[in-house]
Each structure stands twice: as C-alpha cells, then as structure tokens.
Length: 303
Image (cartoon, rainbow, N blue to C red; front, side, top):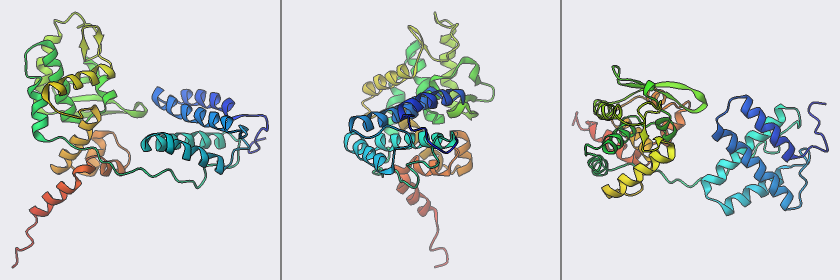
C-alpha cells in the first residue's frame, strides 16, 4: 500500500531502484553518482553503528548522527553536499510511496564557512597569457583554452565538451550543453576569437584533426582532466598560484558585474536559474565593486 513502508525493505535495496530512476530521468552521471553515493554511505553508517537499515525505521535522529559524522570527518563543503544529496534520496522515497514523510523533513543543512574564491589579479591573467604566447600547436591551443575560460566563464565540463561544430565563428558564439543537458549560446570576445582562429588553423594539420572534440593533443581528444593539467602546467610556468578551472568562472562573473552586466543577462550567459548564484560568484570581490560604485556617485553635487 502506498504510504506504508515495507518492513523488510532496506535503504540499500532502495538505493539501487533510486539509481535506475535517476538514469531513466536522464540525470548526468555526476549527479547519479553524487546522489547514490550519499545514500549508500548513509546505509553503511546505519549498519556500522547497529541501527536499523529498514526504510520505515529511519528517524531524524539517525540522519542527524550521520550528518555529525560527516562534518567531523570531511570538509564542510563535502558534508553539506552529501546532506543535500541524501535529501534528494528521501524525497524520492516519499514520492514512490515507501514512506509518508521524509526523516529529513524540516531539517537544515550544516552551515558552510564563508570562504569566497579569490578572483585573479590582472597581472596574474597577463602572466598566464604570456606563458602561452608562443607559436607551437600546444601554445596556440592552451592560449585559446585560457582565453575562452576568461571570456566566457564556462564550466570545465562545458569547455571540455565542446566540438568543432559547437562554434559559430561568424557570430563569435559557442553552443554550450550545461547541467541537465540544457543548451545555451555563449558569446566570446574578439581576443578569444583571434586565439581560436590561430588554434584552428594549426588544428587542421594535426594528426587528430578528424576528431570531433574541439581540443586535441598527442593522444586525441583532451578530457576535463587533460585541460586541468594544461592549466596547472601553464600556471607553474607563469608563476601564478591556485589556478583551477572554476576560479575563472568566479573571476569572469566578477569582471562582468564590474562592467555593469544585469543580473538576468549574467544568469542567461552562465546558465544559472537562481539569482543566488549571481551573489555567490565573485563574492570575494563584492567589496571592491561596492567601493567602485560608491566612487561614481556625486554625493556633494549640491554642496
């Protein structure tokens, strides 16, 4: 009967069904792994601590004990992420009629310390560009990658997933497939266009020119890992610390807001659905933007 838990049904057994449901809904592999990994960790925690693993036996206090364990053993962001993932599992359980109410109803996620991602100094960006200013295939490719990160703020997976067909060079725009398989057009700058033109001319003569992926190397298409590695190599050469793909996204969001882009336009280009994301990205430079805006005010015009 819907709404009445099967006394013999365990959390572990339901996780397998949950995984199939996520795949049927065409959730990304990353999402499927995140949701199911959290649920399986929770099931193991119950078993390891002598708690009942029955779906109908789980209570709020059991979830709270698991959350405390996660907070004590892992980074705050990891613990908070697993809390949200487990919440999705229990919502699905209720939707499927295996419980009337989620044991996480009215619970609040663990608070995260405020640690804004620092944006780049202009000298750091110039150093990265200078480190890729050569004329070899790798120089042209890496320069184009960095220019595209800087110009668009795209996610690592989005950059890595580009194909030669993704580019509309006449419009200086790229078709990006983001989270949830949602497509959007992202414009890029004149300098990024120039960098792409130079790379593509050399790419035509590359042994792997036939590969559909936009970014190629000695072994074929570059993966997300390959792009991360090339950024690290160039960062070491440039003498710039803490260079990672997501930092470019924060930096581009900050610079776009300084330039005066509207909240709705930034959400469209970055593929966000919530205004909260606009406030979160570039947060480390919010004070700088506030000072710049304040300076533009003429508060003594009538004095």
